[in-house]
Length: 151
Image (cartoon, rainbow, N blue to C red):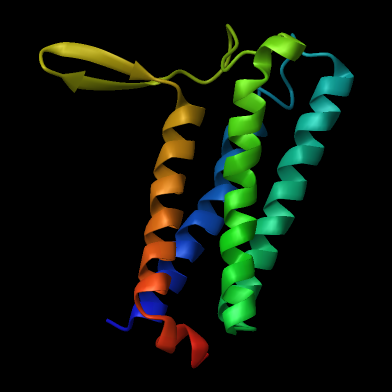
C-alpha cells in the first residue's frame, strides 16, 4: 500500500472518531441532557462537541479534497489539537475541580488482565488510542518524505 494513502487512512480514522465519538458520547443523558448539570454547562458541552466535529470535518476535507504537503500536515495538527487540549484539560482538573466521570456518566472500559479486572476511563482510553494512531500516521509520513512532497 502507498505510504501516503496509509497515512491518509490513519488520519481519517482519527478525525472521524473525533467527530463521531463525542457526538455519540455526549449528546445524551450523561452530558447534554444530564439533569444534574447546569443549563450553562450543557450549553458548553454542545458547543464544544459541535466545534470539534467541525474541525474534524475540515481535517477530512483537507486530507481527501485538497491534498498537499501543507494540508496533510495541517490535518495532523488539527487531529493533535483535540489530543493536546485533552491532556491540558486533564492536567488542570484541580484548578476547576474537574473529574473524568460523573455518577450517572459513561462507564469505564473493563479489561481482563492477569486474572484481574482493569478499569480504564473511556476518555483516557480514546485519547491514548487516537494519539497512537495519529502518531503512526506521522511516522508513516516522515518515513517517506518524497511521497508527501509529490502530493
